[in-house]
Image (tube, rainbow, N blue to C red; front, top):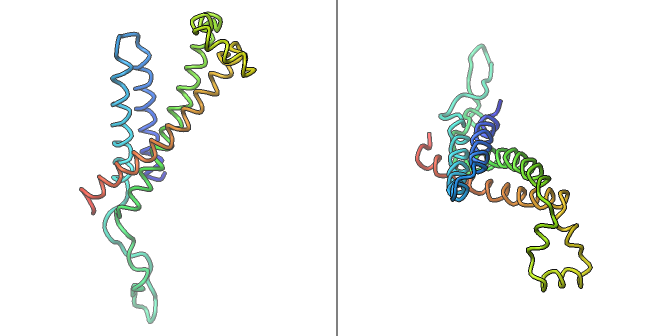
Length: 180
C-alpha cells in the first residue's frame, strides 16, 4: 500500500472524528474544531512525507562477465525530495478531505431532514423573499433536502482543494526538516 494512501486513511479517520466532535451541542465547540481540521491537514501531509522511503539504494545491476555493476544513471532511487513530499502530502489530504467531506455531507443531509424548510423561510426578511420570488426561485426549493446535499457537496469540493494545498505544505515542511 502506498504511503500516501496509508496517511490518507489515517487522516480521514482523524478528520471524521473531528467532524463528529463538532456535532456535540456545546457552545463554541464547533468553532474550536476548525483549527483542529487545519492542523490535521498539515499533519496528514507530513505523515505522507514520512512514509516516503529515504536514502539511496541500488535500483538495477548489470551482469557482465559474472560481475554485478550498477548502471550509473539508474543506480539510485531518489529519497525524500520536497516536490515528492508535497505531492504525496497533497494526495493524502485530498483523500482524507474527500472521505471526511462525504461523511459530513451525509450527516448534514440526514440532520436536515428533521428541519422544516418553512420555519427557515419564515425567518427570512420579506425583502429577501420578494427578491427570490422576483428571480423565479422558490424558497421551498432552495431549502429542500436535495439542495442542502448539493450545497454540502460543493463545500466538500472546496475543502478538498484547500486541504490538498495544506497537505502539500505539511509535506514540504516535513521534507525540509528531515530530508533523508
